Image 1 (cartoon, helix red, strand yellow):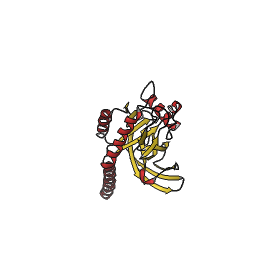
Image 2 (image 1 turned 180 degrees about the vertical axis):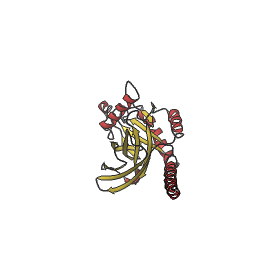
Image 3 (image 1 turned 120 degrees about the horizontal axis):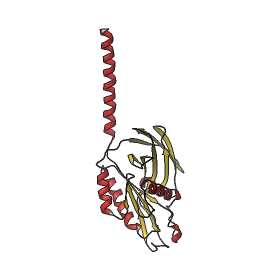
Image 4 (image 1 turned 90 degrees about the horizontal axis):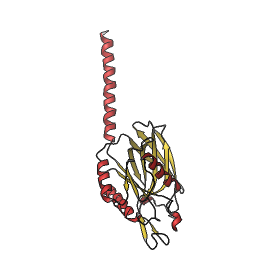
Length: 251
């Protein structure tokens, strides 16, 4: 009996140490994050100042070690004003409408900035953007995402992801983004202007998580440039929209 107890205690002790070790490694993977989503349009005269703010956020994120992930979603509901935004997609408009429901808003508008899926405000408000990012970076993420590019062909990119942490009622959003994109506007509210954008979302996938790992295929536009591009992935609560983990990989 004494021998059995000793063996049993050794086994339990090993398991306990193993659990502590796993938790220790896992805790080290978790850092504060700020996912900054801007809903914008080249057909909106109020949007260029917000685009400039996002460009600055993007540059600051690249210059620092902080986990800040800016994304520029170009909506399509201003295209009727005379200028069709070449980066706009209906699914980005739909994403903003989904946020409107979650955040109990009565309408959608541009420019709108949303930080970590819950803090929404006018995208032209630099003060609120700075305050919101600072606040987000005081809260530790609850999931960690590892990203690897499996294949990069002429027309597509294959991304492999692996997640640590709970995936219950979570979805994974994956965005192919590109910096330094410009447009010469010849019609609409911004006619005569040359607009520059950073971290424009070129392709976007939202996946309801059922497994801790998987693959996402992105389509590349003809103007895609690897040296100016990244893939940003972030985990979001399906019910309240809160973003609880994020990661990025460059090319």
